[in-house]
Image 1 (spheres, one colour):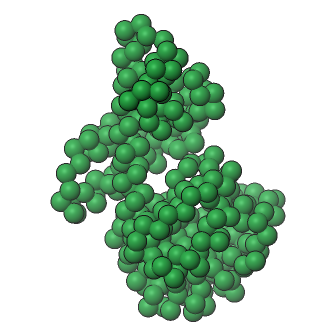
Image 2 (cartoon, rainbow, N blue to C red):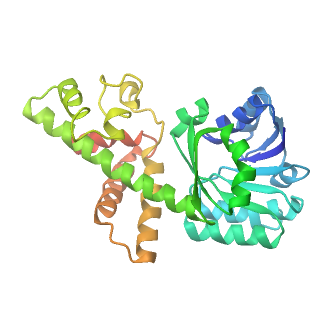
Image 3 (cartoon, rainbow, N blue to C red):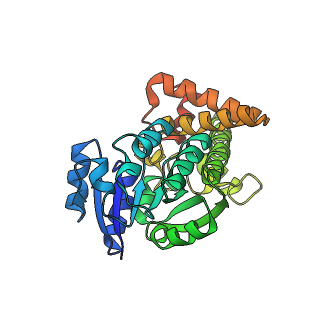
Length: 296
């Protein structure tokens, strides 16, 4: 078993770190929100008082942070991970950030004689809690294999996407697909409502026809067909609209930087921006159906 420092104990990180504790690892956690650390301690972890404390004397450090600027600061700041972790430490960043930041931090880690992968996740809070996350990993073959056992304690599907930054590339491409498809599914249900077609009837037909997709068959945006989806609990987030907007913006930044045509991705980002501006940052992203109904 490994000694692990875990930095970022929010909605996702708290469950990921708890699963590492359940797997028998010695995990010490840090978060700027003190109550998050207290919750982690109650789950069997140890508390650290700073990034430096969480990074010292461990075999690996895992981070789950909001954005690229936070990742850069936490890793490369004067009191950051690279200043406190020992040479040879394995570093895993599971934040969803821009590709450029991921590659810049990986380069800084390499120069500090540490091994790093970017390993963003898919699966939401439910997947984090159940330990069934999908990890999309960027980094060297050797570092990927070193990280695989600990990733398997937190996730079900572990994919090596290529070199540094490619995990982030895979994540933003995947979530652009998700954002676009969720809007399409919601549009279909809104049209069905206007035409007098029952939700369950549309679900039964489309879930076995050419319209079937994850946004319909696993995360259906209307109450009823899939009882466990956020649509059945007032769109309490598993994955918030604000987080979806963040990922769609990252995809658009990457598209512009690489001269890739993503017209539907751009439109999806604009639609989620409207929903976010209407006060729905913390509504589940499937709640975009409210905007399409004109009720946001």
